[in-house]
Image: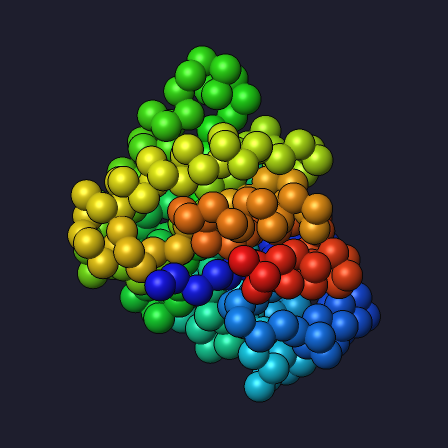
Length: 249
Ligand code: PEP
């Protein structure tokens, strides 16, 4: 039985005061029965780790280098994130694929680097609106997943996947329950091609304008194991409501 996971992606938002305030608000009312994580901007990971120590709220980063430590100006290694107290790291978010030209191969290398350092990568996949309209959703997701699944069963069984349709991110327009469930089932089938343990154990999150009002119906689907939440993760009430929706199902 997979436990639900709700992860907040703060993107490039926050200052020290906001980090302290939001994290305290979350830890003071963190529900039991669901795994909860916050992926904060890199400059605030250290501060966040201090606030979160012993709270049960897990820390994540938003990106990682595919390289181990070395001459890579501006990059952050998985070993550094681990030392800062991260448990999760997002890789392949569409904002990085689109803005920074990250290929699916590079995303898989980032996932592998994260796993080498004991981090759990949250691998994001998802189609653009044009790709959905061209009826290419499942093909695109399969292409994006292929290099990750090629890492092999031992690696794949340790990661998390997030299905995030690009057209739903930050737009207020979520995929319908049916649209999301269909893609999650396809991802689950792809995982079954890797190993039975991957099919049974890998959590597949939905992301894209998840709100307190829409979370419960999404999380009730058998192949939707929680959410990756952007905008609503910046509001303690909304984020906690989404976490509680995961507990309720
Ligand atoms: C995201 O950025 O991963 C995301 C899902 O954002 P939002 O919830 O704001 O759509």
